Image (cartoon, rainbow, N blue to C red):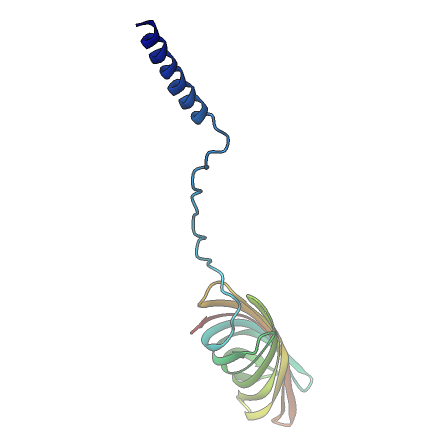
Length: 191
């Protein structure tokens, strides 16, 4: 009987010791980590390929011969850009309605057809612009050119905010040269 008690007691010690050893075993496998997928980013990747439409609000300072005039302008535009990787090429058509009188002559509206070439800096596009311009005035219509610089920033996959400066030279109207500088805040929807 003593042998039996000793055998039972020895077996109990072995089981208890094994359980304690396994519980504190430093080589036991750790729990699997929980991996959370990344959130979908709101910002775009900076792909500028596609069409866009938008509106602008700006200011113009105009010269007609020796006379000067300035005032606000409100515009609408549509265009298309193609992203080649580090540079972007595109074109745009724009109409500006003006409320400006220059030396007694009203500047009623400006139509522009512009080419854009720029640097793709991700969500930022820095560009130069040049093209044809047509001015409607109280003294008649005239044609000329526009040239300038601009910047667009993609807020998300559809909305872009930007600014653009243009020099406008429309040639002679009523015997005087018409030219001016415009600056515009722009908002567009890309598709």
